Length: 301
Image (cartoon, rainbow, N blue to C red; front, side, top):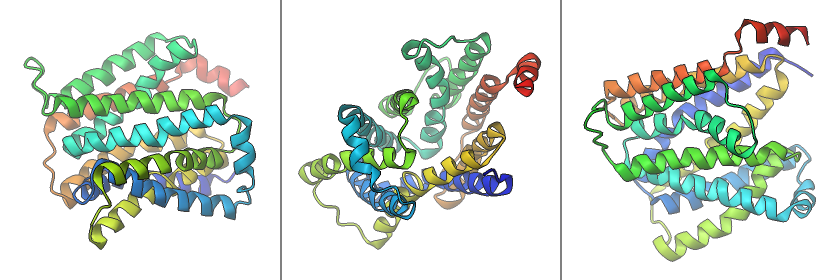
């Protein structure tokens, strides 16, 4: 049953929460290593997603879903959350959040290119234009506007942020043929990766001795980057009759995020970051534009 007002409420809440996570990442990384952060946040996410699945009466699907395709879900869990978030957190540890967040935001453009390779989808002319805008924006952000020198603040951090977009796009490509309940699928991924991340963290980094502020920050990441917000977004898309309108809400997230970074943790926002981010957003909007003929065809369906 569709409910546009409720869909908009869910969508806006999800976007506002996602807008805060870059700030939460930097605060959390001041108390934890990236590996410790992954393990602790994943544990919180498992608890949150388990509670949601139990509330929705879906928890009994967990074993059956895994047994239907154990290798597939093992691969998904290794990609996300294990590899994706470990690499993303490491990028945030090496870069200012005001650089890492817009770079990671180019994942949707990466998805277009990877879909052509792995799914055989045709890349339209407007997709190439979108990629040009998006990746030129990435270069502007990564070099802080010094295009000719190509002098990166942290080459490894930039590489990791961009590599995270490949992993995230690959995760969604693998999900295109996943017919299971989305909450159960995500919960399975976290259950698979959690023993690995906890074991690796204890072996390599040891148990973190963080104050309550650190545990509060990592719990916030686990709840609102990895857990509850995903469910809000899925419900928003299910309740709306206008998917594009809800999806376009995500474009306000990076700008709110930069404002919070400057206000809460005092990061200086370089003008080139805003210019590059606007270019990435332009690329994403070009990518979504259907054109008059396509819009007419869609409306007649």
